[in-house]
Length: 589
Image (cartoon, rainbow, N blue to C red):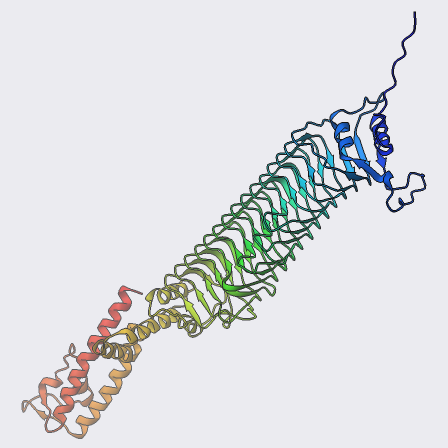
């Protein structure tokens, strides 16, 4: 009877040396580093050395049929510095062991479509393309330092993190160089310092957080960063992101934390540098020093905290430098510390709970700032470096305004504009200059609202001055006959807000008539009448409601009759205008 020995596992005898070494390394749970010449001295391989080569077929066989592990060893495939020949195709394959192909060079595209893998590490690899649509990775997918052609991870699922830091990806014009549409990453997508020519597509993707700090993205055919419908649980970080063309698109994106755009330099020759309509951000949008050549679109966006863009530069070759109608902001909207905007600013229908700040900002000479029907906590207009051409505040509602006399442009639309406080309290004469800048004709509401503001402060004289100015402005719109009466009301009683003028006119006319009738006394109507009193006679003529007995007792003679008739007519007009003006003041303060 013979003892049957246990056969010792061995790699296929027809495999090359490197492939047999890889077989043994997997069995022992070790890595195979082919970056040296195999002599153990770490020297680089000689030119044309075949020791660095490993066939894709051998790798495929090792992944699908791993060698039996040595006792107490967890099998894995870790290959470093190899030249992989042939096509490595693992489409629809299931690989349970961790895979690390580090600093390897591939002759042909790597195909992982719909494969199911554990952790995958392709750090530093150089390959023509990576096709991994529908890939499922149970751990991390590491593509740090990857370089070469296009990368496609359409509808891939990564249970850990996706690492793309310092990757360099170049694609063709037909599709995105990095196509990560509808990618699902349970952890974070880390792509700091990534360099992509041909665009990064994150349409409909989802990740816990996304980092694109110091990244470079460019595209001549579409958005350099397409994040429409993107969902990020925490922060989307794009600080110091450089986009020479194509811009970034975040249409309908949902960001649970913050959107960081600090010192980003974004450009788009065709239109928006930042296109984020209907975006929802749970935290804030922060873009200190942001440069957007191609403008910023935040139409109907919702931001839970603040939008802070101090020292930003927003320019556009079209109409708007900032388009944000209907935006809702739970904190402040800050455009200060030297922020510069070239192009119109559309903030119509916005809701800003705290402050809208333009302090120390500058605008191009033809900029129109549109705040129609906006609702703002505080509008800060102090120390503007350069004012816009016009402000449209029609129907806006602002709690308080911080401004300076020279802050406002020469044209302002103020109809139906309301506010509770003007924190720089100026005399009415200074504020009337502000109201006079209205651009769309006469509207009484801005004057009445300013007068109400002064009355709340207890400045009744200023309130009356504003209401008087309202009537004077309105006079320009009247027909000639009505305009004459309006002038009369103004001269005599100041539309009821200057009743002292009526007394002055009364004294002047009384004196004139008294002098005339002293020089040319009237004749007595009856021989036994009262003694003639020139001043009493003048008052009897001027005041129709007053009867001192002088007008009945004496009859003017000669040319003095004309003086009496003119005085009586003037008295009636003076009394009528005074009563009309005083009635208006009493009934509508």
